[in-house]
Image (tube, rainbow, N blue to C red; front, side, top):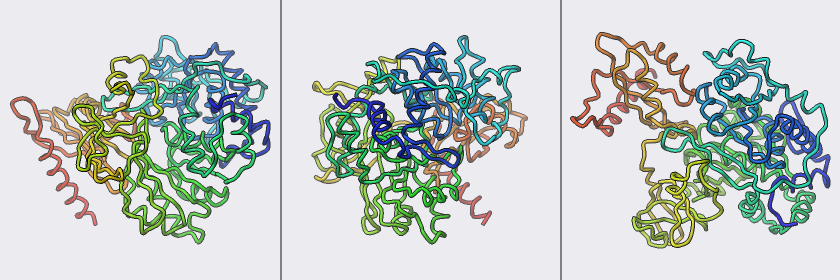
Length: 549
């Protein structure tokens, strides 16, 4: 049998090494046998719900062992798993449920109110599979419609009844990952599940110093050997490709995924898991995750324990943070430049303090395209758009026009071109990232499109005008910042404005800074001098910080 699917290898490991720990969290420990058993039970439940190959199952939850169980069940049965940002509110969730045509919605009990509200607004509400969690209260403003909360089926009841996975998945399976993109409307990037594993062989095996297997049997034998031991703690959410794929890759190697099962980072709990479970690999989302972890790790005698590699993607991991990580352990840091649509495009790798700063270097399948779509990555000093021509997704779900734009065929080869501009620095493939030709704000690894936030601000009766942009932030890379103008005769209450936005936007989209002005000084064409406004905002924010010291 050729090597083609994650689920084939995982089922093989369940037979060859059934008692090996596959997924562990604070409250649960799943062996590979138990992972297969629970996935089989979930597969039976999905079939009873009328879910067929090609249908979508939405995963609206933070990192939990059950997330990976449902993911395995979907991939093994040809059903398309659809991770969705657990920070979304009901209206945002509803739009993605409708867009993905989800037949089942998986969510924790603490988000039951949001899930019920979103599902009830659809003409064809999905069935709801509810996970137990710690009883965290749902966000304010998300009360469920009467009688809706009781409609969910408990996950614990589903897995109490046996079920089986098919010997191998039907062809044509997909993984659908939503990306915020730069248009304000999330789009699902469709990956071909039949060939997904084949596109990850380099990162799974070659980087670990292992021979690349050619069959499922060879992959299972490598996993059964268990060398090197891999125990991965993703501190970035599974809804992001890096954490999701790294976790799947860990399981394919017969390793253990350590799940930080909480909607918010608990740095002390994460460090305890690092030590107690012997984590060897961490997945971070830049300084937003690394800095709180460092604060507690630097006070611990064992530092970062057995961690030997750190993978970060989605936002800036500063040089100072890298130095602090290297000071705690003998580890390698891979700072990854990637996108939901493909990659990795480039990496900055450091093995110790002396390697910092480490510049971004193009991966083998990456390219730089000039204005004529010619590859210029071998021309020192060239400017161009970053591109990738390795393993790529099919495109965007039901959006052929945007698929053609983002995945052009040039000279007979298919690329993904996300829009980042770079400068080629040397003959070794080092590049300088110049930025994206859009106003998207990257805060803590989350993409925020200003137009969406501006519209939410303008929906407030006391806001006459608004503009949103990113301001530098030492932890999150950028902080969402809004400059607003009061309506004539009105006075904007910032607490009231925050409550207003909280009912419409996910928390990470809400402006961290709100500045009130008499006017945005728009030109005759309605344009705002954004550069000047950013400078003024930066000066005001700096003055405020200094005043509070």
